Amino acid sequence: MKKFSKLMSIFLASTMAVSLFAGCGKAADSASADAEGGADVFKIGGIGPITGDNAEYGLAVQNASQLAVDEINANGGINGYQIAFKFQDDETDAEKAVNAYNTLKDWGMQMLAGTVTSGCSVAVAEKTAADNMFQITPSGSSVDCVKFDNAFRVCFSDPNQGLASAKYIGENALASKVAVIYNSSDIYSSGIYEKFAAEAANQPFEIVSAEAFTADSKTDFSVQIQKAKDAGAELVFLPIYYSEAALILAQAATLNYAPDFFGCDGLDGLLNVENFDASLAEGVMLLTPFAADAADEMTQKFVKAYKEKYGNTPNQFAADAYDAIYAIKLAAEDAGLTPDMDVSAMCEALKGSITKITLDGLTGTGMTWDASGEPNKEPKAVKIVSGAYTSM
Image (tube, rainbow, N blue to C red):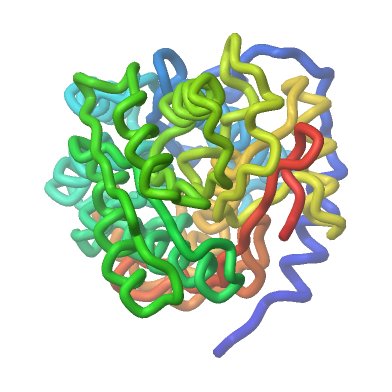
């Protein structure tokens, strides 16, 4: 397989040192300085929640995408052309995500780096497929996010996360009795749980309690927690989002239940939940392809640049988004794209070129993609220690 590891590592190391900006605690501007652009710029759109319960995800994706775009523009753009970038809020609502897509189309979007969450990504994928527009979601993990041949992703799919979580717990002997609390009304959560439960049969632990909640009942988890406690679960698997996880951790503490907790990428953002006692997250483990404390040069330069520009530490969603923009750059350069090509022609070229590139990114070394839209890279796990993610 053709490798560009050394070249990409040198490129990212050099670009991340260029054009750093003064820090602020706000989201990135929704567009580059020349975002309205014209026929001489590539127009990349992004969609995700920057308000509402899952704003932590969308803001991270918006910020990191903008950071990557600014770096690429400062270093000559794509094939000598600059990038214009716009990001739209979907509030984690599928209908609003489609509206955001239409707004970006009216702007002249040629490629989509989004959406952020699975339900919205699935809804928008129907539209990008109909338009034959290239789409790469940083973090939409449902299988259906990439069911069309124009759609790719950076993160692992839900089944892969469920499978990898079960294997990690079993192979590292983290517990012999495991409980699961999941959202049966959410395709992300239920998809992970189904694969986790199937793989658990092959692992040296038992699922002693599996309790669901829905979007209409996600504030009181006392019943689910009590059942896990009564079953003697030493570890509770949480294939859910960070906002619900924060409530579960707080309510478990009031019930004097202190098992180990293990989640997937949806837990990233837990430490930043408003009014949440972050000490309750001590020891929480999660599968995520990115740890901000990693010692490698690429990660540290990214973290430094992100902190200086946005005033906080980037999470896995930020890293996924950053890699998504650079994947577009590499694929566009491999395909020889120019901004005057129509959307469909760009998509056809990118579908062929993305399966040829290799990206040494923040979320994986030697990442490749196949025609299914899935990335090929190794899973990683982190643990919250002293209020920070540490590699396991």
